[in-house]
Length: 270
Ligand code: KMH
Ligand code: ZN
Image 1: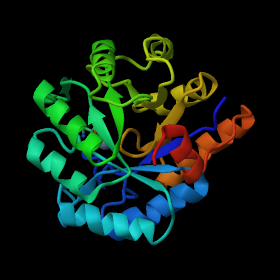
Image 2: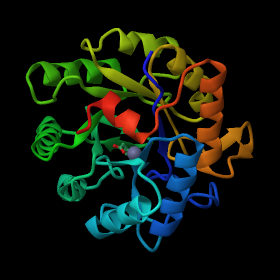
Image 3: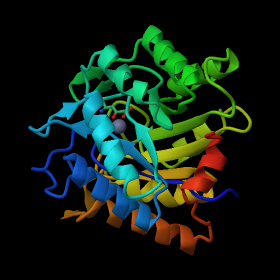
Image 4: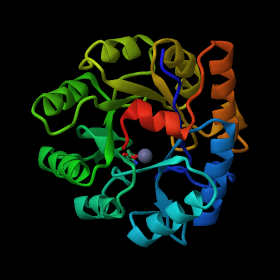
């Protein structure tokens, strides 16, 4: 089995410092947190940025500053969010890609999100995919439902996404597939040959699905974007604590952990 890629989704667009005071929001806070996560075994950081009011932002300047601060500390792969926050315009979601990050998320469809709709129109998905192809940015295809995966597979077959593609199964959202471990296998069995996949469990599913993903040959995402707790009712003190626990799980399950250079090879990042 290939080595395990751990992604740290350190901030997200929805989590607040009120919910967890350890949420990193400034460029320096995010860079220091990414560094701690890298030390704990993460090879990818999934990045959203926040403005001075700690509100979600798609500011190119902020993405650039934060990326620079992260790169000053470690060689972790930086994956930009193109999902942003619900309601962000597609132009704003696309703009940070001009900085040519190594990776970016690509959401494969629209879904109810809280009481809103996280909108991903087909033309916008294709525009983001085309930009990533043009600038050699590795997409991580985010799927929240089986139909979204099946649609993304058609994009692979039609050449909008290069093979082997990398997918993320986001499980445990209120309106998408649940955190039932069987859903990992449901989705995995629909992947085109040679694809790689990671699992992002939401809330308590983050911990519960990590060992399943590890033994199923998938990769794992953890972090405050998806879950702020270390255990029931106990806030995590740092994203790095969540990463470290996955590293320990992997060691216990005898799956080696990939460093950034190895992760680049596994994902075909050139
Ligand atoms: N904030 C969510 C609406 C992504 O980063 O691509 C979307 C999201 C997915 O976080
Ligand atoms: Zn995100």
